[in-house]
Amino acid sequence: MKSILRFSGVYLAETATTVGKKESEGPLSDFFDSHEEDVYFGTDSFEKAESEMVRRTLNILLGKANKKPEDISLILGGDLLNQCVATSFAVSKSQIPFLGLYGACSTIIESAIVASSFINGGLVDNAAILASSHFCTAERQYRFPLEYGSQKTPTSQNTVTGCGSYLLQNEQTSFRVREAVVGKIVDNGIKDANNMGAAMATAAVDTILRYFNESGAKPDDFDMIATGDLGIEGHEISLELLKRCGLNLGQNYTDCGMLIYDIQKQDMQAGASGCACMATVFGGYLFKRMKRNELRNVLLIGTGALLNRNSTLQNESIPSIAHLIHIVREEI
View 1 (cartoon, one colour):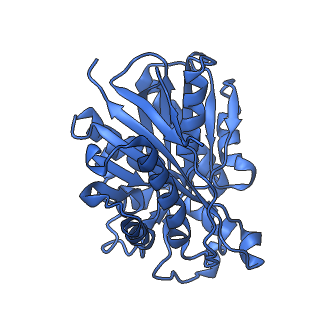
View 2 (cartoon, one colour; view 1 turned 120 degrees about the horizontal axis):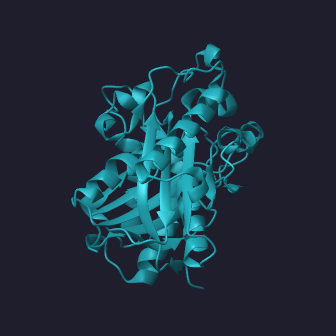
View 3 (cartoon, one colour; view 1 turned 90 degrees about the vertical axis):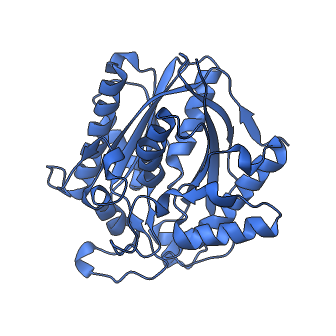
């Protein structure tokens, strides 16, 4: 069974990013479009704040792409909240057809694959994709109320407060969406919700191995191979597992969860996580490097831990997934 989906005539036109205070204090701050110091984003609840963040980011994308809402064929995306309410509330007044998607922290890549399939099949001319997360909403939903003041473990990761939105289209640009691999759910028996990097590492390894085994490509063919939010722990585990399988990804293999913060200076334990982790790091940092011609051939592997609060309380293990997309810069 073939794993790789190949697209023709699907292009990345523009990206937009919004981040919160801690992300603004990190090393990638200058690459993001919008920064917000107020954790409430001018609203009266954390959930409304995340929705407002999504709304702002979509508007930034439309402005950068010189598009009006009526020019967009479809919006795809989601977040970490129950029923993806941050996203659905944010786009509810746009009058743009909407598909809500959930892939945990792999959502931006899942959305890119679905959008690319729509465009490749000639069903739509373009699609806006997005993914968001907010530290305070994620803590409240998955862990403990903020007032509880729970302590972080060394393997825990900080949920990124941010949103990334991209415009994909059939009109040619210098950035082509070339290939994708839809992830398989992998469960290696890890039950520690404070070590999601380890839980997701095997899913990332499965997807990466399937891609390289089928494509015939070599790691050296790529300027950057980036996973979504394995963090330090998951990144090291994935490196070791890949080496055992005979695949050495080398120096161009990184993880967005290790890039967005100064982990030591900001005391971020094992790094970052959240839907917005890859969405903002690629949409801000990596895509701007592609625009500068510093990166031409990029593999993105969005990683997601498919748990919720109840599954953790019931002592279930953490199934995980990793979706891959290949973006290349080509001269027009």
